[in-house]
Image (tube, rainbow, N blue to C red; front, side, top):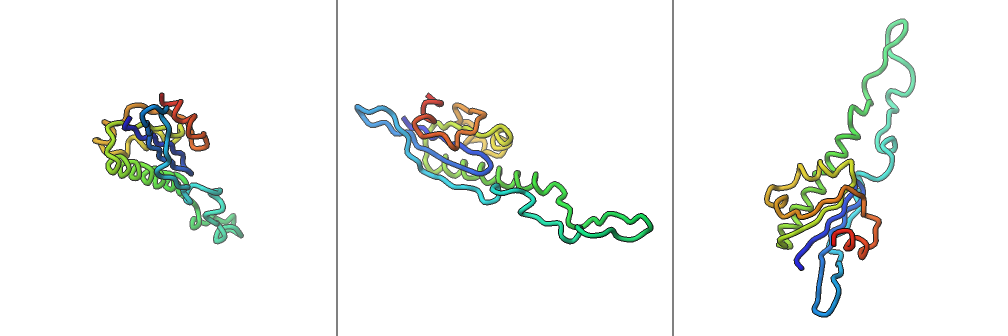
Amino acid sequence: MGKIIIVADLGHFKAYRVVKNPLESPRVELIENYDSIEAHGRFAEKVTDTAGRFGMAGGRKGAAKGYGEPHHMELEMQKKVVKLIAGDINAIIAREGYPRWYLAAEKRIHSQVLENLNPEVKTKLVKKITSDLTKTKAPDILARFA
């Protein structure tokens, strides 16, 4: 069959190879699987604001302290994870050498992952689904891309 199916969200990544032996139905084999540590847990648990938690600085009414503020750190962490996912997809598609592949990624990262893919990898993309299938069983994933 020569297909790869990749499912991803910010916390999980799974890559499957579709295998079809003579006299058998197609099945999927897991070829890569990892959980992203960056995406797990609450943002507040990753950064602390202990420096700015107590008191105000200067003046009669005081002024808010500027250090310790996240300044879009959550968005930057998301971009980092998306680039990691796209890089892994590029590597898997190049390594496996299959002419076709499929992608299912959650809505908030789907377009960002596509933007970060190599052009030659994008041309091999046959079907894309905006859905989080990372917790879906392998046979059900295959059915979604049939």
